Every structure is written in C-alpha cells, then in structure tokens.
Image (cartoon, rainbow, N blue to C red):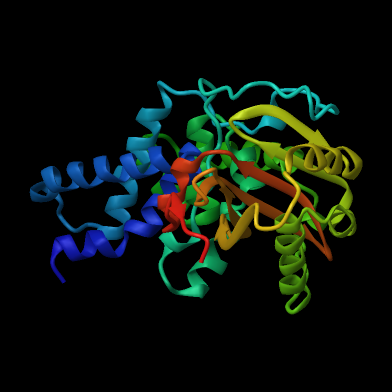
Length: 316
C-alpha cells in the first residue's frame, strides 16, 4: 500500500477526530486537508518511529489546536439561554454564531461495527459538551478516552508531562460528568421498537399528525433549530411549535431516513411552488427508551450533499 492509499484508508476516522475537536464538519474536512498537506511535505522526515495512522493523528491534533486558537466553541441554541414558548415569536437566523454541526455516519465507512464503535463519542450531546472544555483538555480527553493513547504518548504530542496529562484528564471527566446527558437519555429502544418509533415519527411529520406526535415525545422533549437561536422545551411547547410551522395537507413534506452522530436522523424536504421538493433541514433525533426526547433540526440545506442527498428532488 502506497502513502496515498494509506491516507485514504484513514480519512474517515481522521475527519471524525477533527470533528470531535472542532464541532464542525466543514472545519474538520478542512483540517484533514491541511493534515495531508503537512504529511506530504514532512514525509521525508518521517522515520517510521510510529505507524502512519499515529503520525497522522499527531498532525491532525496539532492542526485542530492551531485552529482553536482563533475560533469560538461550537454551540447549540439551548446553550444561549432559556427556551421560548411562543412559536410566533422566533428570532431570525443568527448566521454569525458558530453553531455545532451534525456528522454524517456514512463518512466513517460502510462497516456498521465502526459506526457502533464511534457512536458514544460522536453523539451530538457529547460533542456539544466537549466544546465546553479548553482545547488542550479536549485533546487530552479524546486522545486518552476515544483513541486510548497512553498518557506518555499524549504528553509527547502536547509537549507536557504525564502528570499534567492525567490531571487534565481528571478535570475533563469531571466537567463532562456535569454537562453530559443522564444515562437513561442514551438508552435507545431495541429493534424492532426503534424502527417502529422512527417509522411513526416520519409518518406523523409528513402528515402533520399531532396526535401521533404527542405520543412519540417525552414530556420534557426539546426541539432546537440552529441557526435559529430560539428553542423549545416540553412536549406541549414543541407540539405548539409544530402546529404553527408545519403546513397542513398531503404531500407537503418528505422525510428521508439517514443517520448522524450515531443517531437516527431525517432529511426533510419541503414542496415548493415549482412542485419540486427542496432541501429544508436535517433532523437528528435522540431516543430514550420508547420515545423521542430531543430533536436537533439543522436548518442548513448546505449540509445535504455531505449526507449524499440532493438539494432538489421530484415528486416521484
């Protein structure tokens, strides 16, 4: 295998690594491109004291740390303040805010085991929580907990001591324990209950069946819509939002099943005046037991190509 083939073999996991660090798919892809440029330029000095994979991770981590010196952490609307309760009083899109982005599972490759193995550390709530950590602390957490690097190797990469690495890891764990979701929020239903729940959600959204949707949401369900800063919390307010914003009538919307961050997701299309379906949002669902506990609806049609989906599709 030549160097170019080795680079290609590790691309998916490197994008996932940079995504955990940066919280943005587009920034992660740019970081991997920069990683490959640096690797090509420095290959003559690479003495194979480690594997190519480890070498690439070292470069990618430093690229991300450099980028984080000049950027703000990625956030979700619920990090900005209290939820709204009036669907007619929704703030305009805040395009200047550095919003968290979803990660298409297909970028990890075709092996389902890979997706399962990456799942916990890629979940939206977990990546959002990691954004609260200082960059170097975030790097320590990912390298030690996700990639299972020895503390000595992490210390070498970050030009510090193993004592400092272990101390940083303890602080990162404590902060994540405070921020991350409760364990029951990460307990998804098993098949076929999971499939039935998703099928019902898709059908209810497409037909605007609020009665069915009411039975699918948990009492404390959340609905967030980046880049719109207004968000809603509680089944009643979420249903009020959907009642206000979903246009009634058949064949108004089409939901296409996909997956992001190891979670079920739907790409939603809206039928326009031209009778074509236009990309609207990517909705990433958090399931708990037998219900939907949260929906992060990314109102960013530009994300669709990353999921292998067209921006416009016909009615057939």
